[in-house]
Length: 374
Image (cartoon, rainbow, N blue to C red; front, side):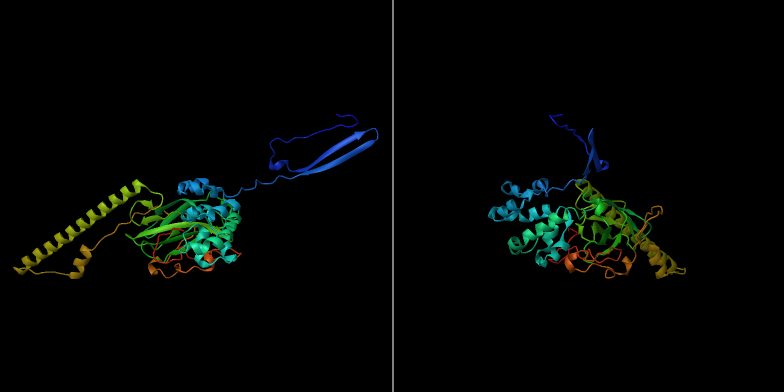
């Protein structure tokens, strides 16, 4: 209370969304009443500029260039013009992409195809042609995509599902999980460029038509009509073998499992060869004995069936799953990924459905066989 006045204050120490609304202050004395209305709005915390200092340290960005890891535009330009930071430039771009694929934004802003891989944190073949002109535009897409694009899914796992199928599961991304509209699963035999793919809005997918004793590589990405995440680390899977390994996340244990698996496969092959040799030897002995007074009932087709390779595939109980995929046995061209980027390799429509074009080619544009590394 002051001379000729009275001050009343309301303080909300820990504000919540439910505290938003209209607040009224009523004053009354012998001469009358007065009411003042105040509206309180609660806004979401604004996301800060990209801060990827930890990523820069993990990727061994030199100490002289770490000041670029705040990605303040002024600092960024000053680092870009320092010759000693040129070797670190691709590392900075990888960290700034922050696990998302910003090629849709870059394509809309006329970034040339030779520089598009930078928009998802990949190397570009002619870095000096992209640095000065296009790096600032690419960084503007990085900042814009921070709130719009999801990060990559987590914990991709594969298990056997029936005689020719596999069940792929994963966890939602940490970055912007609410922004995910579809997941896309890619798979292909190791060593092939073409891949099959299918979409789902769930965090699991069953793929069918897999061949036994063929090693497949599988990767998943998340996306929406604005763009996508980068691909998850590749998971390798052999139908009929009870292990799954990730080429990017498994360490010495994965190597040990692979070595043991190779040894087991070699032993099986040796046993099969010995069985065939023993069976043929018995047939030859039988033929000789029959020629000495008996009748030979040789049947080449029967011999081939009896000595043929037998593959046993373990099965898991059937479950209720979505998104069955067929057609792997029909060849890799049906539904395969073209080795040519289309419109930056991302969704370019506003209506997202299972047939939405996008996630086109996730191989770097320099061609040649590579693992899923985008």
